[in-house]
Amino acid sequence: MSYHLLFTVFLPCAAAAAAAPPDTCRALVIDARAPTHTTAPYFASWNIDSSTDREFFMLPWGSPGLLAAAAGLSAGGGAHVRFGGTGNNALHYEVPGAPPCAPSGSGYTCLNESTWRGVAGLAAVAGSPVIFGVNFFPSGKSSNKTFDPTNAVEFFRWARGSGLEPIWGVENGNEINRLVTAEQQAEGLLALDDALAGVYGSDPRPVLIGPDALGLHSLVAPPGAIPTSVILKYMVDFVAAMKGRLHAVTHRA
Image: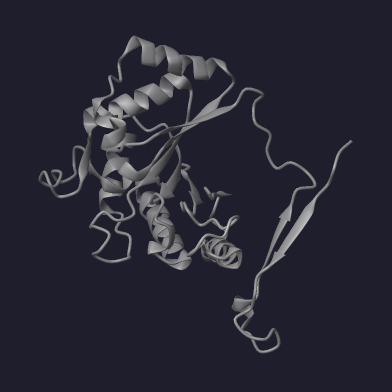
């Protein structure tokens, strides 16, 4: 037996429907009557987080055991690796052509050439295209809420020129939640895409995935929980602000 589902979620308007501006009353329609994509039977997805408390900078990337485990993922029928996590919001890309990393104690960590070679090599052995979580706040969270793609472009230009770019998609920021508005997060991802056009030219560039938010959940309503209507509005506002250039929507509860 098969089931065909069509969901429509209506978001609350800021005012009475008759008086509300058109952009304040929106409907999110999810048509699940037919699959849009089918994964391989043994598909796997895994994550590499550059946080120091996960010992990212201590990993022996050339370890035979680690490479054997990665090769096992490839044999399973396909995988994706997400290079993202809390630590990715503190990364400065210290690759040839980019300025040196900030001094110790600045709050930043350094993704240098040898470390990225390790990540890219492991992904290649695993047959896993990379979803790259770009640092949304390269100048610090308190400085401003406008994304500056300069350091990211330096990294992608070097990686692409070095043949070390198994990057299939990009996310902008990690778990930044409502530190920026949905529109600001979309503006940052579109700015990254526009900047990468200068790196890739007429060749296909990484697809856009987002918003990268965590904690926008309210299935249980403890004190301070975010109402479901606010979560849905954030997601819909983000999708609308992406102007049709978004490849996939993400949400992690």
